[in-house]
Length: 631
Ligand SMILES: Nc1ncnc2c1ncn2[C@@H]1O[C@H](COP(=O)(O)OP(=O)(O)OP(=O)(O)O)[C@@H](O)[C@H]1O
Image (cartoon, rainbow, N blue to C red; front, side):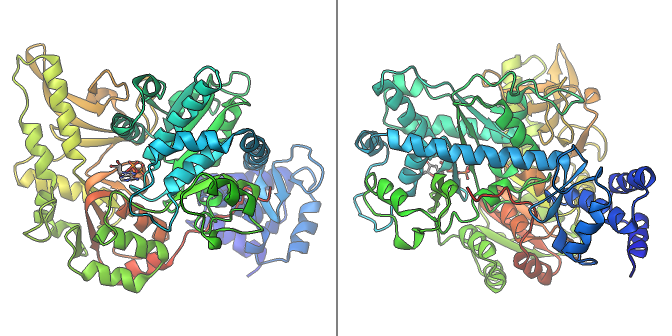
């Protein structure tokens, strides 16, 4: 097929977005572009929609790399090949970037390189004996001496001696526990050096993740052996990143930036797999030069919907360690067990010395169904995945169904087998919705009831892989509403009614609601009358909930079912993953893993065709656009 024919096919087809097509039309009109280059530009723009940072020329097999370069050289105002004249497209690393994204990539790469230099200096300045004294009470050596090092302790030591660090680990591996201990260690180091306490900020990409981290930090801090004074120097409030940076309506620019940096010495960002390059670049711009940055997250989870898979890139070799001999020697001084030889490498990069991976889950028994399934999915062992699904685990349920309409009993009770104890279907939270306080009840009582409804709602969540089709978010939500209405659990099956769960789909700065926030519409007493209002979890720890009138909520969707992407940063007692009835390109190992790891106690998989599960597990997401970790 010729370049013209291919271009025509894309311009008429459904793959490219309207934006990609408009860009092509614009440049064709403005620059009288060759069809081949129009195709290249369209594909480069489309690559961003798929989460890539750039378009590698090797993925455009119509021409050789040399031919592409020769073609681009004909339009020096459009493509930067060597001299930067602010052209809209940049050729670098054998790939084509849109200028803005090339800028983000460069900024992040430069930060990482500088952070490695600063970290080396920081490590040399720390007395290992002093650090060991601080680590010992927080990470006691276990009585049953293990041959494996305590990775929480070592990750804490890595982060304590780095200006930038990453702590990665699966669910329940102790990321929060480790970071709280780290903050205590750092504040004690400050005290011992006669310096003022560090100004620390905690942040997460979504409101839900922020609320979850806040409660988890409080519980962790309560349990730790440290003086009340030291504990008071560890913050427990967690902000969303957008709030911290001062997001503004209708603007890409944040209030906090290089000219008005954040007033902090240390920033911890949880759920970092959700960070896209644009947000990361904004964050780095606003970070004061002396400040430390610590990213926490699970490298195996789905990456952000936007361009870039930062966490996965940073932690590409976390499993293998790649620690240099000198890093291992430094860490071994602080540890009861030495770093295993297979994690030491003489080609480890500087940045890899700043990454700690937690390897043991303290929440899931390794023999539990959820742990086994998550591990098998992560390893891409599709036959084992299929076998685990069919085996009889107390914390797993597997259902085959091609249409959600037939799952009424499951939707009400959450049970696929009668003996299931942890199951809670939607009737569970709707029961709490019905137990509304009396018309005369005080605000505090009403707020506590709403808080309980929100907590009970998170006992059961449907997670769909896709939006369309009989197993997609839209149809599943409609089916659930119908089922609940028929069962008499909700009074209406459309629009606003008591019990309707909604998810915000666009940031609303006026209301202080962020994309992904979940609220529940309730019939609540207000000044002696009944009124419908939507309760959202409050980020402000002094309030139980925030109330918003339904009429003020323009951008919301019903949320019995949400996409797996939107569920990141949340945890549910019983999470249900609903796979589509046909193959979709969104199906991947990361998606299935993210779905499974949303479950705290029980995981159910609803699968139309077992083959689709196999295909998904065998497909790993590939994203183009390395942040060049060669420093
Ligand atoms: N070393 C440990 N020994 C025993 N229990 C631990 C240890 N570390 C953490 N835990 C417990 O395991 C649970 C999970 O820990 P934590 O919340 O820190 O993990 P996490 O990785 O942040 O989890 P997630 O991101 O999945 O919420 C907590 O109940 C915590 O108290």
